[in-house]
Length: 90
Image 1 (cartoon, helix red, strand yellow):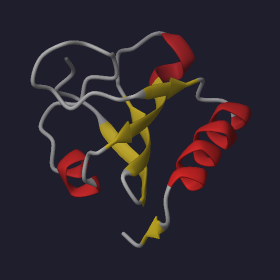
Image 2: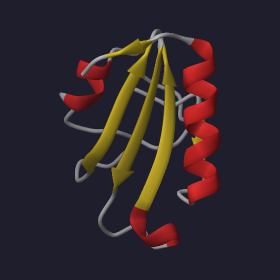
Image 3: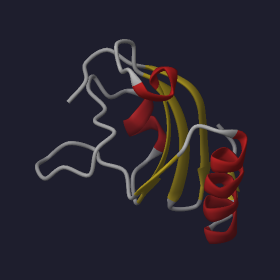
């Protein structure tokens, strides 16, 4: 679980949330992650002290999907969340 992270994009669509996160110290994809959450409130993610990008067991807020942090990955993640719920203004 990572205690050091920076959220630089967070969009809620109904029960779905799209998040772009920077994790300093991760070596792959320049420490960037594109995550999708389901049945998690955007404010719970933005207020989290720890945000694990893995599909681990336990009480942590965990994503339902993770995409490559490329333009195609971001497009696919946004398509998933937009197709599943109405946009919620942040």
